[in-house]
Amino acid sequence: MNSYHRYKELGRSLDYLAECWAKGWSSDPVEKEQYDWACMEPVDDAREDPERAWNFILLALGTPICEPHLGVLAAGPLEDLLSHHGADFIDRVEAEATENPKFAHLLGGVWQFQMTDEVWCRVQNVWDQRGWDGRGDAV
Image (cartoon, rainbow, N blue to C red):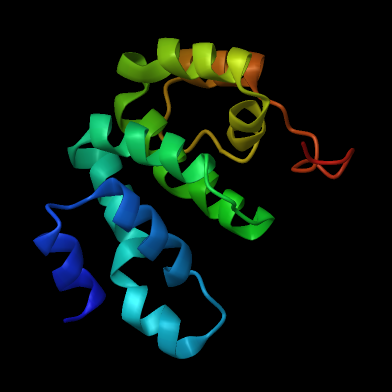
């Protein structure tokens, strides 16, 4: 059974998705091909199922994640979530960034994309861009 069918069999488990998502960014071409489907799943969720995307982002951030994957998480699911559902999530984003330095750092990797100016301003008020902006060490 391939990884996608296993994911469906498990009822679209977020734990399994996070594991497959990390493998989908592998430098091993065989592993990358097997798990490539998982790279877009969280981005699709950010548009269609924002609660699920929010939970995925927090779950993925809580796993051992290397800096390149952190950039993909920021510029993919988080940026899309804020672009499409920012008004509904900005209060939670601000609270999480205030309590969780790793999340504040993740916010530093998003761009405005389709966020409203209000949401973008609020993101900038709580993000930590150290390491993203080339002016300091990452968290």
